[in-house]
Amino acid sequence: MARVAIIGAGFAGHTAALYLGSILGTRHDITMINPSERFLYVPSLVWVGVGHMKPEKTRFRLQPVYDRMHVRFLAGKALEVHPDERFVVAEKNGAGADRLVRVGYDHLIIATGPRLNFAATPGLGPEAGHTHSICTQAHAVESRDAYLENVARMKKGEKRKLVIGTGHPGATCQGAAFEYITNIHKDLLRQGVRDKAELVWISNERAPGDFGVGGITARHRGRMLTSEEFISAVFREYGIAWHVQKGVLEVDEAAIHWEDYDGGYGETTYDYAMLIPQFTGMPLKYIGENGDDVSAKVVNPAGFVTVDGIYGRPYETTAGDPESWPRVYQNPEYESIFAAGIAFAPPGTISQPHVTPNGTSITAAPPRTGMVSGIIGRVVAMNIIDLVQQSPMTHGERMTEMAAACIASMGDSLWDGSAATIMMYPVVPDHRRYPNEGGRDSFVTQMEMGLAGAWMKRMIHTTFRHKLQGRVGWGLIPE
Image (cartoon, rainbow, N blue to C red; front, top):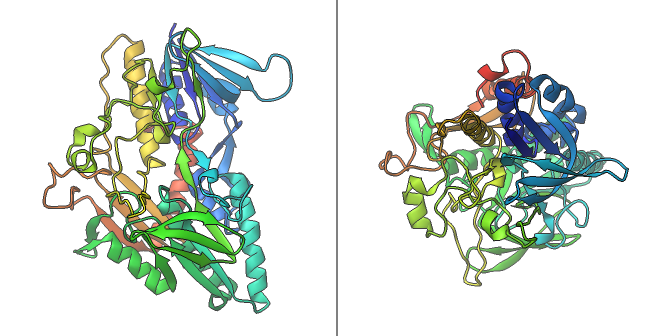
């Protein structure tokens, strides 16, 4: 009997658990380790953050799903990985002397998602700082309450300045922040106070619409258009001021302090701010058979798991060589360890990096969330199934081979809402295959905006919750 352990029940880990449990679960031991007893559908937290969706609509209990899928569920926090002896030490939720448990494995998937590194920017974050976040359910609820308090003040005639974007020079998830600011715009219109609000976008992107993927050139209404033109047009139409090429260095109670591409320093005042923090890997301990620290064999300095990519190359080399990007997401030092989703270490950035004259890197990190996470979770699961069944690994998909869709809602109404829908293929440009198209297939890569996108966003919320709960036909719904 093979033993497979999974750390993390986000999009990547949970998707892997569904495939592993459904195919191997009745004959082998599949164990999920996750701190929360509920799955969190993160893409819909943007609606929670403006008060348009109840928090409970973004969550469901994991235990019933895993019971159906023949997956053992350990609700607790993974603390240590012992890759030589192949076991994980986890701390179960609750009280009692037997809280520490050892989970053995033959194959391990690390899919922990990100550590929200608010501490990397002094003054950032809802716990110890002055800004808000929509990265967790609790954060989204706090953001909602603070946002609605600002709306109430606007209804009394006050003018308020709301700043949305990224809160660190190396942050990612610009798409989520963009969706949040456009939803705020739509909600302020609905509330009748848009004229009382100054909306400001601040980001470490090279240009609007970069989104950490270097921007795209795509078809829009029959002509080729750049994402910079597309997103800038949205900002102009919605009356949103934008400031890119800014790395946030510190936040105090009145202002966001930043450095720009030229090495200049400045500040942006605010009344309300939602800024995405830097993401790093989760702080697991990796302990060798002699008790020594073997972290350097498993993770990079940021805590992300190194896999079968080619690391250490300059941007120009990595960007021009698809084989720099991992295919099977397996650690080269410990072949029993795989990583999926944000937990894997990318070999470099997708967006062109920039270092200021002061030595500060202001560079959008590569996104590895949502659809990409689910795809990698499936790839890893299917390869482990191959290995358990004594076959060579037959599944592989680089981010230079993946398609991804991003649907950024602009209001959640199915009658007068809208959404920017961006389809790109591949996620990481492949300049060998598409040398004259910016590294992406211009037939597949598209950008549209309108009411149809709002319907699609709501449909995806419903169908993905269906899939992720392992309901009838779940495997027919693509990642």
